[in-house]
Amino acid sequence: MLLINAQFISEGRTFRNGWLRLRDGVVAAFGSAPHPTPLAGQSVLDLGGATVMPGFIDVHVHGAVGHDVMDASPEGLRQMARFFASRGVTGFLPTTLTDSRENTLAALHAIREAMAQPTGGARILGAHLEGPYLNRAKGGAQHLDHIRPCVPQEARDFLEVGVVKLVSVAPEIEGNGWLIDECRKRGITASMAHTNATFAEAMDGIGLGITHATHTFNAMSPLHHRDAGAVGAALLSPHVRCELICDGVHVSPSAAEVLWRMKGRDGVVLITDAMRATGMPDGEYTLGTTPAFKQGETATLADGTLAGSVLTFDRGLRLFKRVIDPDGARPDLLADLVAVTSANAAQAIGAESGIYYHSPADLVVLDADWHVLYTIVQGEIVHDAKHAPTP
Image 1 (cartoon, rainbow, N blue to C red):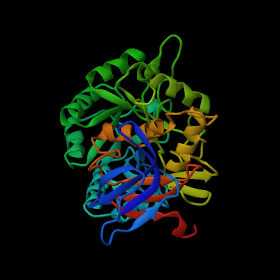
Image 2 (spheres, rainbow, N blue to C red; image 1 turned 180 degrees about the vertical axis):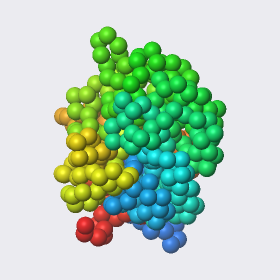
Image 3 (cartoon, rainbow, N blue to C red; image 1 turned 90 degrees about the horizontal axis):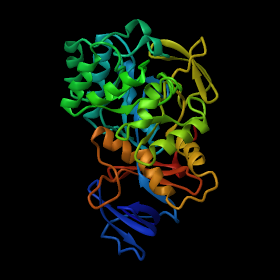
Image 4 (cartoon, one colour; image 1 turned 90 degrees about the vertical axis):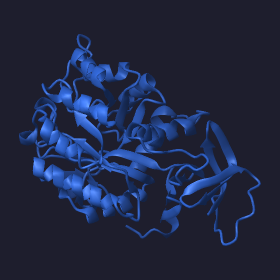
């Protein structure tokens, strides 16, 4: 496939009237206009000046379109993957909830099974284990009865399924330090999450190997003038990447701006934390097995606790763009957006992302208003907005 009349960025250089040749699932060549002659039998897609970015990578997502990762259904995961592709996501980490050993293992094995074949949408890049090794005091919508300190043999059982790329853990809980160190040894990213850690405890966890912060600000000890807490530790540690649910509900635009100014281009990872009700009408659903209620752009438990989100990645991008570029004047906006939507996430989980020679042809094409026109996975169009079925 030959993409022409496109804007994209590669190795710090922006091509404002460029072209890309995709072949065998990778970017085979690219450059500025005029575009080369198509190869025999090669299709040509004129993008009319649209923007091409590396496909979005969502490292924290629990469900969508009526499905939940804890259903342990490979077909449900594939349906989620196709929905995510319609929102520009080309790769994601299905994310577990705190649950029993048996249910968690079932979810991880379902993820492994779903990874073994094409989804028809976004690629499943591994799993994010959120819990059960958290702090009940910051449990949020997690199943509090299943939150527990780390037992090494159980944790090994989870990790040895072979799909876990990211583990969320409360560093202050006795025994969890072993897991942080074990993740470091295995090349798995450890993230602080659902934590009531003091600043000193959070920094101890970072010293052991934490390099990520799960849904920053949410379910973690806040920045306080007498103790900067887990939030302060994440903001002050240059090698800690911070997830952000940029839906205007979980984090206010002003707090999102604080995070951006503190962490910058290399330190922010946009996520959705989406749950089963994402892409569905308002009504009653579940988060895992707990009843949750979708109303507009919010999902809550019966007591009003936020129950994940119903954010889609493309909408999160547009809202984040308003935070960092409200006047539409940033000359480096595209590089910023590439970083927070794909590059930083890819680095966190050891995946490939970018537009360069022989890079994966996992791409999203966006119009001038940052809406998804096409999603391309391994060189194949898996979403075409012009021909997508009406919801």
